[in-house]
Length: 331
Image 1 (cartoon, rainbow, N blue to C red):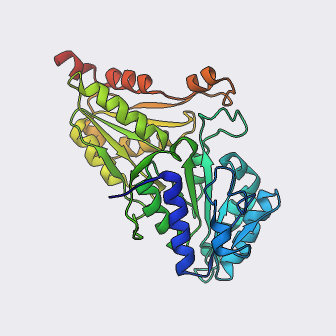
Image 2 (cartoon, rainbow, N blue to C red):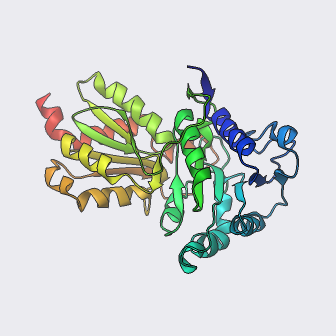
């Protein structure tokens, strides 16, 4: 099967859906001739024209507001915010309008809005352009939240998000844009709310999101050399969350490490840990749940400090060994 980059998979999905459905259109800053801040929409204005690939003013609240209004009238807007940090500017439209309209009007109105946005650190973009704020929007009833970690997942989840009649926040980690995986050319859907077991193991479960999925897999490969078998689960969507896959894995391995890039305090890892603690899996745990997350500091500009502010492979390895004291001692 052919390989695509994560970026190419996102672009291909949007193009395929726009060819099929005239109601799908794009809005965002510099997404036209320039091709977007990270080049995801490059070449799309040449195929679809400026009416369907709309450059906008530098106003995230205006972009989100127009998207809500157009979705209410039957369109299916895809909006791109250049950095996920800028979602803060559009929060009123997203939280108080998009997320609530379908509920408030008893289902008579719907908001099939897709917001795509690059997130995360690792590019030296500093404090205002490197945050991971997915826990903010995951807290809001009415919003769905997606975090693909591979090109294959990005294509299938993006199609599902475009087809969904609810507002979806779609996080694309900057460091993943150049990563490759096998991706079918034909359109396909990955259901929102279905996790993926990226690596099977018997000793410990790692639940990781976005770039941390890859670091967890690297950690699993290193731990395998020491006879420690790690199961890596990628939720893929935070809302809805596939609780059953996580619970079943923890009941099997009896150990859990949760890792995300976002600041640990108030991060989504706490939700996963609490969900497990409130489930049948709690009675199978052989050690306390371990959470890894970013430090409670603005993301630094300095490359060394930026790296130190978020979990790395060695941090995940250390966390696994801490929760596996009983297993490591036997081995």
